[in-house]
Image (cartoon, rainbow, N blue to C red; front, side):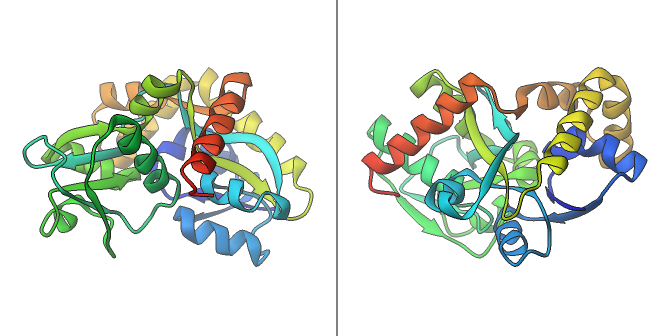
Length: 244
């Protein structure tokens, strides 16, 4: 079995047990890369960006594992040097879901600014030509240390809808239920052995333990009724704003 994994710290906990016990081959990639790997059948199962899934539902089987937050997500953020969004927001090259989520949030808040696609994924590069930057994953965690957070998109979405934001949803081309079961088992093991996972992550990434505990607890990785409603709300907003 080849299971895809977003190449970000936010997936460390749910995949920890699988990787520790070498229960499957794990292939790491960015969200955009993951789509290509899955569609070319180079991997059997993986989380993919929610926006892409919603746009191409007919191509995929969908499962329980997800990448979501019920409020602040910490690693999908808009940052700037002065704490203001400004007129030009540079968009990381790594995302599709987050840029469309940002479009919805800006429209709902009545904020007018220009979104500028870039070839970079680091805030310091994007901010050389833009007032603020949308960054995700580990680049967002790094940006939090150097710049001011203007928006946390998970928090903004929860304030707007009252639901969790599902950024990624697990999918496959062929039946891969066994992969999903394995990942959910690994997730639950990680939550039960939280201290071990956090200690390992601190040693590997050199990130503050208190922050990692907060970060890991902010993330949701198993679809429930509220996540389903959040995903449905995102789809409806995307259709209302003609993004889908």
